[in-house]
Image 1 (tube, rainbow, N blue to C red):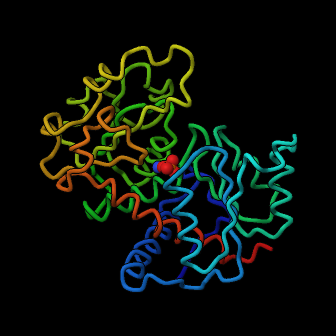
Image 2 (image 1 turned 180 degrees about the horizontal axis):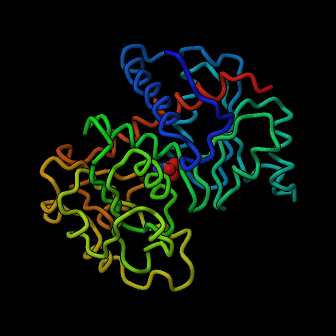
Image 3 (image 1 turned 180 degrees about the vertical axis):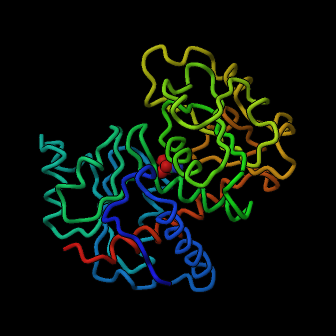
Length: 312
Ligand code: CP
């Protein structure tokens, strides 16, 4: 497959073109097939090194980047932030420059602050991959979500996608909104006033504060976790029970959507808060497990496109 990808880093969805995204998804699609048939190391990235720098907790993203890199034959180093020299007062930039000097070919960075991967990128020879920066973007999550949607619905253009929950603090929502708008999907956001982003009017979305109205006729529903770690004092003033009553999804409320709707969630799921436990596990609607599995193929595609370049 001819690869056309001119970026040295993957920092966000906003600055990718639909053509760039097509390139990543086409490669990810072929990875999905090869992972099924021959789940072995492909060796394309043999001799290359990926370094995972996760300043915030992660299960899915960190592990799938590691599996993806190893499937392609790369070596993987996981930096234990709590045992790194940042604990001795080293700045973040000095730390990443040291890791870059050690010969890393890719730095996968997750950080609680918006903009950290974008700040680091011009200072290093390695390719930087944003694995989630604050409430800004989580590009590989949106890419894997797009692939799952496309595999189920055969297209993105014209799909009605309802994203529900803590939109204000969600990097997943922002990356998905950018991506879906590039492909002509109809994006709705559903949130209580305290989780509605102040800039939602600039986001090319239709906003709702009523879950059933927001999911009416939807092809895809994406539920989001309350990002407690990013909430300010007094920002979430209702009980989880009240929140779940008004903004939690269950089989009964789901009847408002299309009969063949798919239900997504980037994880981690807080069961019986934003989604009922039985709906999260219902294979008729829920594609949550498939999202996790698709993450390896998508991250393989991203690493292949970035790390195959001669950057060092
Ligand atoms: N979806 C997601 O980013 O999950 P993790 O926090 O487990 O990586």
